[in-house]
Image (cartoon, rainbow, N blue to C red):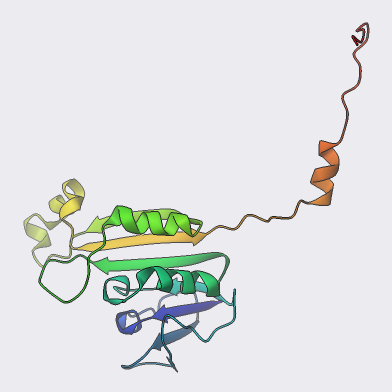
Length: 178
C-alpha cells in the first residue's frame, strides 16, 4: 500500500501509527520531502496510490479543482482521499471553501464521502470543549472529510449480459394475442 502526503502540512502530520507503511511526502519545498514536485503535476503513474492526504492544501492551492483531479488520477479504484482543513478564523492569505462546496467537488469526481465533520481543538476541553464539539459542530475550527473513489465499469460483464437475454416462458393456459 502507498500513502501520498501532498503539501507541506501533510508531511508534518505524524502518521507513524498508520497501517500503510510506504508513505511519500510531495511538495515544491520544505522538509521532510521525499519527492520535490508540483502537486498539480504529480510524477506518479495513474492508479498507483492507495490513499492521498491533503492537509490544508486546497485553501492554499491556486487551482484546487486541478489538485483534486490530479489526486484522483493517481488514486487506485476504491482509493482513499483524506482532507483535514483548518477553517479560516484569522486573516491569512488562504481561501476558504465551504464544506458543501468541497463535498460537491468530490461528488463530481465520483467520490463517496464516508465521513465528514467539524471538530474543536481547544485547550480548555475540561471547561466545555467537548460540549461545543458535540452540540455546536459548525463552530469547529477543524474540518475533516474522508472519501473513497468509486468507479463504475463501462463494459458489460458477459455473464450478466447473457442473463438479460433470457426470454419469458409462456405460462400454462395462456394464449397469445396478435
